[in-house]
Image (cartoon, rainbow, N blue to C red):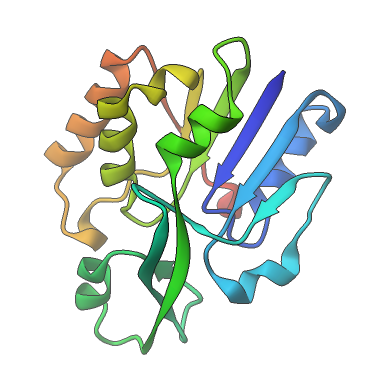
Length: 178
């Protein structure tokens, strides 16, 4: 089975971009978006929408959303860096991405993960590498965040190298600006 996982779905722009390039009848699509204000945009296609944050455990987590830009994050570091924005703090449900992968994907599946989650990608990628579920992913697309969450170019390089060491090449993906 072909599976496209849109992690950090925003308003569905990545699913729209994906189905403009791939026949959606050939893919099972899952969209993950924690921001409750964006749930109204789903479903975009025939995907399964999961209104939860992807994280490293199941449960609840603090989540911030900007009332100025619509940006959101799980990382307080980003909130501290953007002090001119008014942030609303809330609690949202989160899922353990490793556990979700193991329960929903097999090695026989072809899995593309698109991840744009405002810096949480560092913790999640490290978690799925440590747990071994990274092996269930065939392609990794997305945005790796740096300066706006306190990371350096070296941090970005290290994360890309970790993916490469797991036989994944990071593919930049920005559906909002295509």
